[in-house]
Length: 337
Image (tube, rainbow, N blue to C red; front, side):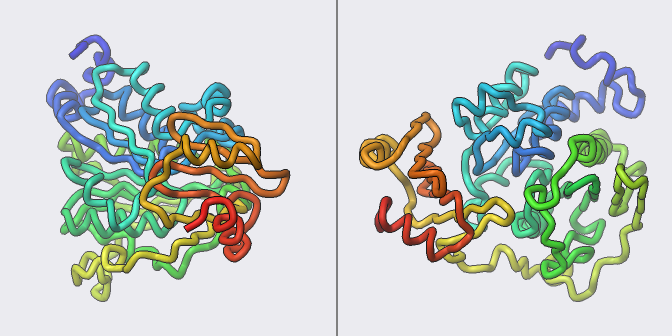
């Protein structure tokens, strides 16, 4: 280990040499490598985390560059998956960190493989469905879970510890989602930076043995309208199916329908096949559309209305509609069953 690299961090007395060693021995999972996830990963890698595992299903677009700090225009031109692009940047920042990147959609069918060998889970996602899944698996496996969310100029964060704090389900019900997304009301980068920095700070307190300084609150703020609110963790909800009754609803659900509307993105995801041969698909579709093949995905532009993004794991994004029937018609017509 390059001692000089972390010298200023080690001089911070709450961390010191022992804390730095603990950071270097810790393995962290970041799910979602977009706005929050890129900042989270950047802080963790620069601090010398031992192992970082990142998972994201999406690829880099121009609209990401305003706030997703690890990406650049070259990543957009190459249509790199976010997980791949992030790993490439992070390895240049700190080659000592072991980094694993997965271009996959996190579900209750594969979450266990991502959790194995992990000490702490950080939320970099943009939807509560995945957040509740992470919450449930963390409480089942007794792993700390760092929650964060941002939309507009408003953000919130909390650090949950099984058997010590309530869980996300105790504080936020699934049916209570506002429906606002970055694609519908926008987002400013400083709000992202603050939330993810708060998340990582709590993680560092936990790793280095400074649990007495953990916030133990759900912190919310709006940096544009100068509003801030901090709610102390209540006692766990006695009816909570996760932390009180060990039911873990997100882990019990059956596989969802093949068609999923990606809220606010004018896109339907269809995941019917378990894998796709991108070269064969490109050869077939190049006859009827403009194609761009990369080692990670295939982009297909039929016209100004509909585009496909095809992934090796069988997922197909139908861009240009939120009508699942229309998306299914396009899929059946050009991909088939």
